[in-house]
Length: 177
Image (tube, rainbow, N blue to C red; front, side):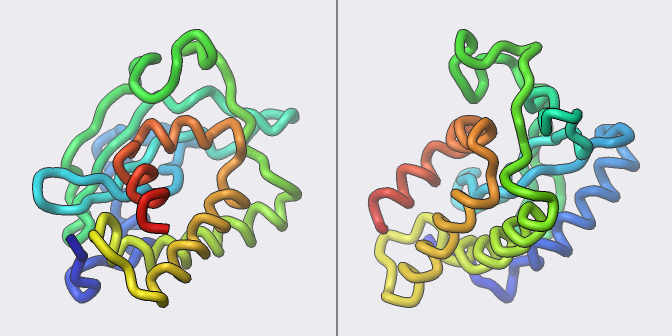
């Protein structure tokens, strides 16, 4: 399964369109933003899934745990699914209580911006071949860049949530890389 890049919106364009759409629907409240996108399979197509997160951490660098999530069509930017997160949806409820916080800062603010940019660039490449049965050398290199950017760009407290958001994607990454 390979996505035709000519049919995909650029991730930044998709993100901007979704922010506008989620705002107009009243889904994004003040200070809330979509987190990083992760590929998910929806039937025979690949879509983007993300959490809605607080954009401003407290002085300890933490925000409330993800409380909402959505799936968007990669080509059109249409919202495919939206839901409030239940505590058991993505992580072990005992380790990650519903009223818990997650620290989202991963380095200095400048490093966070750089890591976020690198993650976005790496993701733009990987989403074109996510879930493919085999990868060529260039795709493997792109996937490794994504893995490295994900490790640097996503704070450790959030990684379990992302792994729970698209377990098939993380399983695929470990199998083809």
